[in-house]
Amino acid sequence: MDIDPDTHPDVDAEVSTGDFELEERSALRRVAGLSTELQDITEVEYRQVRLEQVVLAGVWTEGTLTQAERSMRELALLSETAGSVVLDGVIQRRDTPDPATYLGSGKARELRDIVVATGADTVICDGELTPGQLRQLEQVVKVKVVDRTWLILDIFAQHARSREGKAQVSLAQMQYLLPRLRGWGESLSRQGGGAGGGGSGGGGVGTRGPGETKIETDRRRIRSQMTKLRRQIAEMEKARTTQRASRRRSGIPRVAIAGYTNAGKSSLLNRITGAGVLVEDALFATLDPTVRKARTPGGREFTIADTVGFVRHLPHQLVEAFRSTLEEVGDADLILHVVDGSDEAPEEQIAAVREVLQEIDATGIPELIVINKADAANPEALARLVRREPHSIVVSARTGLGLEELLAAIETDLPTGLVDVDVLVPYARGDLLSRAHRTGEVLSEEHGQTGTRLRARVPEALAGELASAVEDA
Image (spheres, rainbow, N blue to C red):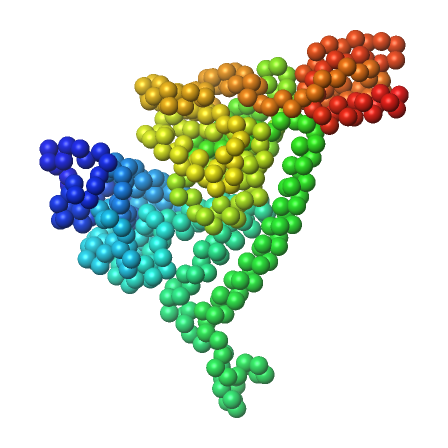
């Protein structure tokens, strides 16, 4: 049912349940502009390109209609990233999702009619469904039902490249799947074993008796795999922790790039460092962290890490599984919070990212908002965002706009943690002089007969090594 703007002029204002008639509140509304089905192609091409044909379904419980439709458009982008073709999308206005079928039994039957009419083979819901909701909605619509959480996990599984990334995604999928095994296919409830006492054939010693159900076998296998994955991730985490500790000892400041998925984090890293990281116009193109070195305009060296993108309602299983990777953010001296300035609601992106930062205990770290894609953004929207976030820099990773200002801001925001030294460094320890230039602020150098008189501000660890070198000389 369409909403008449004359009847509801404040449709984009905060909505209470009393703003709508009961009939309107429970109606399924088509969301315009979601279909990504290709047109003007032959039947043969049509059969080849159509991978998974999906209908999207959402429940709008709070906020404005515009926000609800924006969430559905993001779900459509996620679906495309997973390799699906979106045929249609509907949202229902409810106070809370139906505890049985998510949409309610009547609306679930209407959704079934849309599935039949479009020829879809999958329904994707904009929320995390309980095992019971998944099972009962599948029984009504007669096709596979996937929720937003499983969709994001599927995308991560497709994009993971490193051994650690694959292990983390597998663990997150199993954590999600374990409580949802019941009812996912008739075979899950079949008996596995139990030939009965004295029966011929059978499985031999230890397999007779009632046996265990297929679902119990699956659960036991998944728990065993999860234990193995946790052990593997813990071992890989030791190596990552060692690398971070080594970077800390070097005294080089650490910068982490964080932000909403597809905000341009990898493009920004490439622009700053020439890292050559994969850049793709897709959600969650980067899962494995990349750490590179860069220099400020004043010559100060720092490391900069690109990290996995965040999204609204990022599955808790992923945050837990990727905790060791996300510690690159929590261990940083400065967070570059990259925002897509061309997005229709960048403020919502900022709020979603800060929610995840809070979950990984990274809220106490200095944050510099980097408003990216300025070349494609509305100037008025940029001005509004800068007013809202005064500690921000407007850039374009594509054109290089604002890059010098960004590097200068990084130099200003990086913690010094430096101590003053005035030492005579032996010529044999030129490596210490080089480190002083890379990691500190060299005030003056005077070359004498036995060494170089160095006045500088350097990290404490380097100051100790300089002192030892002087004593040993």
